[in-house]
Structure formats: C-alpha cells, structure tokens
Length: 368
Ligand code: CTP
Ligand code: MN
Ligand code: MN
Ligand code: MN
Image (cartoon, rainbow, N blue to C red):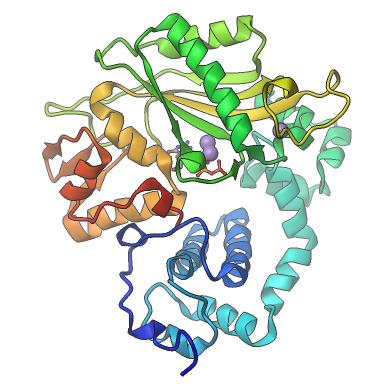
C-alpha cells in the first residue's frame, strides 16, 4: 500500500473553523497553485471564485500528509470541479497550465504590483492598468493625483514590500507599549493577526488595545498617535474613531463585516539598530525601515470577540461567520455573538467557540 492511500477514509469536516490548520503543512505545491488562482480571482473582483479556491487550499493545508494521487481525494469536502482539475494537473505534470499562464500574464503581474502599493485596491489598479499603467514607476510618471495613503504607499513601496520579521514585530510592540502606557497606564496590548498565529514574517504588524476599566479606552488612539508622532515614529497614519451601534442587550449586529472599533492604519519608522536581523544592511543612516502597523482599540467587554476577529486568518474568520449563520442560526462579528435576538457574552475565545458548538482551535491552528 502506498503511504497515505487511506487519506480519503479519514473524515475531514467541511468548515475550516472545525479543523486544525497549522502554518507548516504537507501540500505546499498544491496550495501555492490554488492560491495564485484565488489571488487572480480576487484581483478580478470575482470574490466567489476566490473563496472557492481559498477553501480548497485550506482543506489541503489541514491534511495530515502529502497528497500523492487524485484517488486520495475522494470523499473530501471543499474541492470543487475547477480546483480538483488544477490539483490533478499539478499531481500529474508538476505544474498547471492555467496557473503558469496566470503567473506570466501581464495583467496579473501589473495588478499585483499596483495593489502592492499601500492604499491601492483592485478597482483603482484595474482602472490604471487599462490606461497602460503597469508598475509603480509608470504610476509615478503618470502624474495621477494620489490620495495621502497612496502617496505614502508609493514613497515607501520597496520597504513595505519586504516581509516584516518577527524581531521587527517585537521592536514595534515595545514602542506601541511605551506609547500606550504613557497615555493610559494599565492598558493591555496584544499582538494579533498573523504573528499571533505563529507566522515568522508578515505584511504588517497588528495590535489590539484594551483597558480593564470599561470606558477608559475611549478616545485613546489620537493620544497614542500624538505621542508616537512627537517621538518621530510615524511616517503615515490614518485614525478613525469608533462608531458603535448599541442595542438594548449589547453591541449591535453590524450591517457588514467591517467592524466599528477605533483604529489606526499606519506606517512606522523603525530604527534599524533596534533589532538584530533587519534585512537592511548599509548604509544605516540612509535607510528608512518602514513597517505597516494596524492598531485597534476595543472596550474590555468586547475584547474576546475583537481578539478572535482580528487573529485571522481571513478565511478562518469567514468560515466562523458562515458556520455561525448556517449551522447555528447565530451572527458573529468582532463585537458580539448573537443567538437570534439574544446576546451571548464571552470573556475568552474558548467561550466563543463553546457558544458556537465548536472545538477550541488555538491561534497556531487557524492558518486556513
Ligand atoms: N481585519 C479586519 N478588518 C480589517 C482588516 C483586517 O477585521 N479592516 C482582520 C482580518 O480578518 C484578519 C486580521 O485582521 O483576521 C489580520 O489581517 P491582516 O493584517 O490583513 O492579515 P494577517 O493575517 O495578519 O496576515 P499578514 O501577515 O499578511 O499581515
Ligand atoms: Mn497582519
Ligand atoms: Mn522592513
Ligand atoms: Mn493588518
């Protein structure tokens, strides 16, 4: 018997939030191929298609061993016709023609380069692409009027497209902690996003801030930003105040998946001397280490929901909400969980999983 032939008889649950998905898994070649197609669909604003490829990739990431032949996939959920076709191609030929064509297409390359500019989404990138703008340099030369975020994105393009290392994340965390404690002693700062899931690098660093005395956290962000600016740590920032909706029982169910916390999307300037494995060697005096940093403030009573909602991965979050709605008739957001009209309180992620009737999945296994 070939190793792993018994894969299909292992029953694999169909929602990613029912599975353990570690960072390191056994099917990188397959998931890389599917991720390219997912990315291409997302850049073409075909969300449904993107999700289908992401779900298929996530299923493969959760398997306990390498898939060697298509027959091992029989009976597994989440694998649509298109994804299966791509998987079979890669298993048989080592590559998929569709993936190769996509990777080398002028449009895909341009859309990736343009959306790689902070502040530029798929719609804007597509408009520019159709005007013949394919690279950040083309954009620079075009004389287009850019907003503040896009100007910063273009200015720090190379820096922001280098992966942020774990040690840079730690250094940023120390700065954020000093800033927050200078303006609100007793506040609690938690590393969220990909680094909380155990990633060694990221495209940014994400932090959640709260205070045990409910209400003390209100209006915190502008004060933190002032402190950071005075110290010269910010190259760019955009702060948005909270816009909570309250219902009789608790935080209201938001109309969209976008949460309503006070937040700051920023670009930090990090001194290259403050961390050891900076990918920027000489000359240090000329180097600006620019790092994207997201700061979110939540009231203490919503902290567990905010923590769960901001730890990711994006697909894991999407699957949690889909599970809640379709399997439990509940609604989950980064603010609250509702069982129809009833607000379900939680002070830990474990309690939220329990309310949802799910086994607890730790952050390191949410890499769907
Ligand atoms: N998130 C969110 N609302 C936003 C942006 C992000 O709720 N406006 C959540 C995402 O759902 C995700 C988490 O914040 O769960 C982190 O998002 P992001 O930083 O984009 O991704 P990471 O998983 O941290 O991966 P990376 O290393 O690329 O930053
Ligand atoms: Mn992140
Ligand atoms: Mn960097
Ligand atoms: Mn982020």
